[in-house]
Image 1 (cartoon, rainbow, N blue to C red):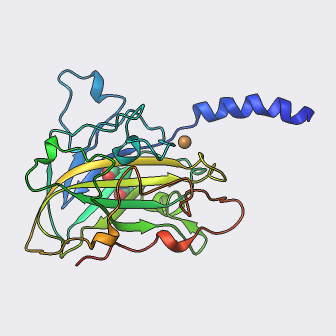
Image 2 (image 1 turned 135 degrees about the horizontal axis):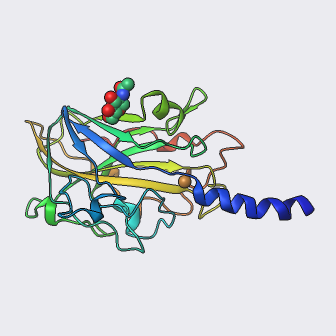
Length: 249
Ligand SMILES: *[C@@H]1O[C@H](CO)[C@@H](O)[C@H](O)[C@H]1NC(C)=O
Ligand SMILES: [Cu+2]
């Protein structure tokens, strides 16, 4: 009892100073882009144009019911469209380089894409929570004693690389790349979501679109009951149900 009373304020203090993280550069089809810099861009004049939608900082979203869970944001407002669009070809690679990721923040690294409606431009499109447009193209979880988020990421120069499905139909897409940190996820709320969204224009001769069963909305994809969102990392292995890419049709 005595010990707990002393430890609690210390813990609270250390949680405030711990660094989290965000994507700081992204390489798409060989072209390197500076990601949105939350601690620099807003203070520049003019504010630089980016392919990434603005994020409020390097901290997490924890409420899975807010629009913020989609592309990051603050206070439920979500993220606004960005000015630039990266060009990519189906089958090409995208590499996300994260700022130093704290070793305590273990969890999966997941990437979704979302097609922009053909009558809309991506620089004006922000999906609502009822737009069921997102499909998973990549996920790393826990395998052979290693977490994607931290162990693998750190061993790869803080870089996560995904391949755009080669059969995917050309057009504009949002790319939502996230780490879910599970170090406090034993109960909800607790899991920490760190999503970053990028705007791409896909070329190529692909004709396929995701099957409708594979599509989710943000918010909506994650709930307080989703396996893997409530998870005790200190007491077992993660549920494998989140793995696998979305099937295309
Ligand atoms: C690590 O990634 C950064 C950002 O992409 C890059 O500038 C740097 O050259 C990489 N380092 C190595 C050793 O690959
Ligand atoms: Cu953190």
